[in-house]
Image (tube, rainbow, N blue to C red; front, side, top):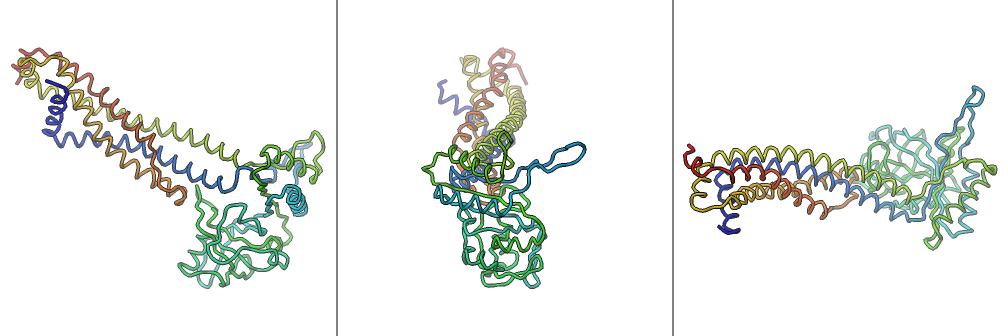
Length: 415
C-alpha cells in the first residue's frame, strides 16, 4: 500500500465516523482559536499604537511635572518639585521654537470630571477639559473633522469657544453637526467651533474622544484661583539628532526652573519612541502569555485526540488483523493511524485559524476602537498549522504503535 493509498484509507476511516471527527476537530479548533486569536489581537493593538507614534514623529518629546514631588523633611512633607508654571512653559516654548524651528505646544488639564450640557442632553461627568494653544492638535495628531482649530485670536481674547471630541459630539448632537451650537460646562457657555475625528483609545476612562479643548487663556480663567500644571510637547524637525535635541531641551528647562548643578531634574521628559519601546516590551509579554494559554488548551485537545485514537484502534482490531494477514507491514499500519490523527488536527486547525483571525481582529478593534485595521498575522497562522501537525503526530504516535504491534492471529479472533 503506497503513501497516497494510506492517506485515502485514513480519510475514508474519518468519514466513517463523522460526528466523532467533528467533535475532535472542534476541540483542536478551540485551542488554535485561543492561540491565534490572542496573538492576532496583540498584533492589532501594536499596529494601532505604532501608527499613532508614527504620526507624532520620532523626535517628539513631552515635558511634564515630576510624578513624585513630595519628600519627608524632619517630620514634615516638603514639596521639592513645584509644578511647571505658565511663565516657565511659555518661556521654554518661545526660546525652543526660535532656536530649533520646532513646533511646541503648551497645554494644561483644567478638569477631568466635567459634565457637558446641550439643551436637555448631557454627558457623564467624566469629560476632560484641556486648555490648549493653536499647535496642540497638529503636534498630538488630532484631526478636525468639521469646523476649525483654536487660533491665536481666540487665545489673546480669552474667547469662550470649544472643540469637542468625537464621543461628546455624538452623545450631545447625534448625527447633527455641532459647529455653531452652544454648550454649557463649568458654569460657562461656549460656542462649538470644531469637532474632532475619532481617534480611539486603548482603554477606558477619559480617552481622546472624550475631551473638550478650550483656548489656553480661557482654561486659566476657568481654573480661577486654582494653580494649573502645564505640559509642554515639542516636535523639532527630523534632521535634528533625537538624543541631542532632548538634552538641549533638558538644559534649557533646567535653566528656566533654576535647577542647581548636581540636583536632579525637577521635571520629566518622555520621548515618543521610548514610550513605544515600553509598549513593545509589554506586548511581548502578552504574546508569551497568549502562546502559553494556547498551548495549554492544545494540550487538553491532544489528550482528547489520543483517547479517541485509542478507541479507534480497539474498534478496528479485526480490520488491522485482516490488513496484516494480507501483507500490511507495521510501518504501513503506523502511518495510517498517524495520518488520520494529523488530518483531524489539520481540519480543526484550519477552522481554528479562521475563527482566531476573526476573534483577534474583533478584540483588537474593540480595544483600539477601530484604530488597528484588519490584521493578517501570517507568522502566527503558519505557526498554528505547524502546531496542528505536531499535535496530530504526538497524539497519534502511541495509538499507531499499539495498532502496529497487534498480533494478526489474535486480532482476527477479536469480536
